[in-house]
Amino acid sequence: MPTPPEFPVGPPPTDAVRSEAELREHIDALAKAPAQLRTLVDGLTDDRLDTKYKDWTVRQIVQHLADSHLNVYARFKLALTEDWPTIRPYDEGAWATLGDARTGQIENALALLDAVHTSWVALIGTMSWDDFARGYIHPDERRRVGLLLAMPQYTWHARHHTAQIDWLARQHRWR
Image 1 (cartoon, helix red, strand yellow):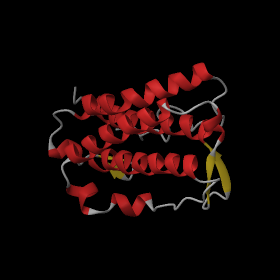
Image 2 (image 1 turned 180 degrees about the vertical axis):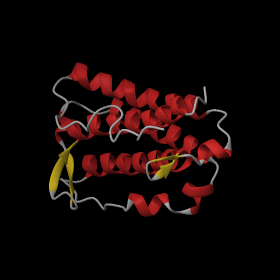
Image 3 (image 1 turned 90 degrees about the horizontal axis):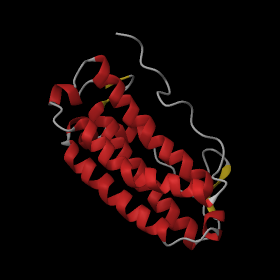
Image 4 (image 1 turned 30 degrees about the vertical axis):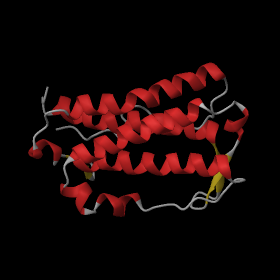
């Protein structure tokens, strides 16, 4: 089997959203992301869920998406209620080794991702363009992350991990 690509949908974005039309595209992508992932993993057996893409299994990737997007949803709320708060990073690799990520049923992670994205999209829908000028400080990266940059980073993040699972499905002819 070929080596899985590092970035199956291309590298992470480095540019912030520049227009309200572009922002709407990202909001739409966030709204659709959980259903796209759910469709891709629907019916996968435990053996398939435990297939690795590089270092993580499909099961761990699904849990990671829920964990990561739960964290960014909280970061959005912090950014909207505090003046450039310093967020608390988390060790995503360590989280991926926890029991729920390694052996848990993915339905819990999928339900969490559904709920987080529904709430996140609802929150974003109440924000003004000026609200998107806010952001948070990421201490590990030692930089400010504006919400207009976080949007494309996390829509990319959802597509990136979904594409990893899709790559495995195509390589193993699961569909």
